[in-house]
Image (cartoon, rainbow, N blue to C red; front, top):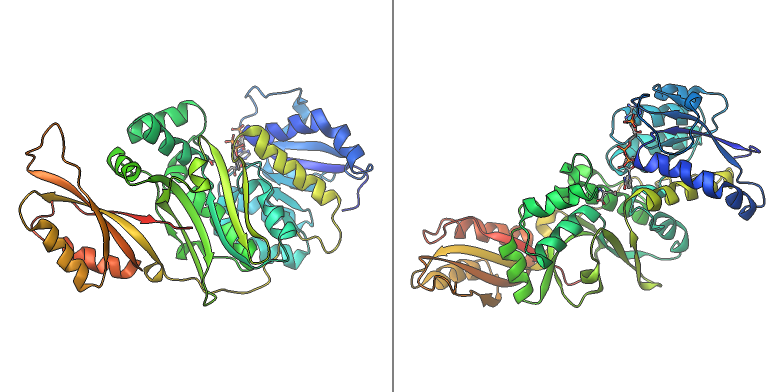
Length: 434
Ligand code: NAP
Ligand code: HSE
């Protein structure tokens, strides 16, 4: 863009939007001098829902409006920053900005993962870029790393812990023995979870981010409808304890793996990870993304994946990037129409399966014979006796299973469920070797 001062229209002045204001107030001059004067910026319009709310910082009242469209239409605005969240109003706003030839910066992963196909098409048609560093892993500069720094590599795998709230909840369940509701309450009280925590705990916030990472790594927009997603809502302290007994931790892992046949596996689910793996030591609300490139080898990106400062820092880096923009700097444009996503049933790992069974002779043999019929090998079992109740009528029986396709495991478990010894549905976790 070639403006002497970049006029910013800020849609949203919540956690992240007000953080952008703060950074520009505090470091505007520094940013300008770092870019030899080319990155002078000024916020010229701010849209919010409620004009009566008290706002952080010295924000002049005349900048505020409740009209999102005014942010785009204001002639002094050169670039639109979308930080309102959601996929409806945000989509209309971004579309309008692009069609007006005004580049967009957004931190909205749901918008890009679910409606990116439409938005990037408009971006291409109008030759107007969308920048989105803040959409994945907050303050970690992972988008620019994949798009720019690693451009000379085929990306073989991406393994991420990219939802801070889930990571915090699982850690508190593991280390403090809290139940899921107790740990969730703590995450909400500390302000980690979103006001509506649904997407945090049902896996979709992480999945949206994985879709974006997979799309930029492989050059086509991954259709979110074909992505396998499970959240942490049903993880129990019992499985966390058994994981620990067996040398694992439970983490909400997002994986994008390019397999040997050129297919892309993508999944987000709570998984068993060896305690010795580097991602096992990612604690609290921190994020980490491990990337393997064919020439790079492995690289780990670690840092704060959420919160005002880290996320606003990424938004500001995109604003500076926009001031450096040239005709060819389009943020990101897909360069392939489609790619081959591997069906989840065809993806193979080893597994932890917990069966709740009636304690009678022959139970293990009954289950093992169904697994054998489906050619699924058992690498170990685990069945601790309840010290408080050694003569319990029901027991928890854990089987560790050799690598097999998920579809085959599902068929076998459907058959096991018909056995009269089962008192509950089996609980399954993938064991990710990474
Ligand atoms: P937030 O605190 O809820 O703030 C949202 C802001 O948007 C508020 O100022 C709100 O106005 C305004 N707004 C919402 N709908 C509007 C509408 N229809 N018209 C005008 N203004 C509207 O959200 P946030 O945490 O800053 O997140 C913003 C975006 O960044 C989201 O897409 C989120 O997923 C993404 N993100 C957030 C984080 C994080 O750590 N928070 C990290 C990475 C990415 P009022 O103030 O009047 O309510
Ligand atoms: N709620 C998200 C998280 C915010 O916990 O990771 C950052 O996207």
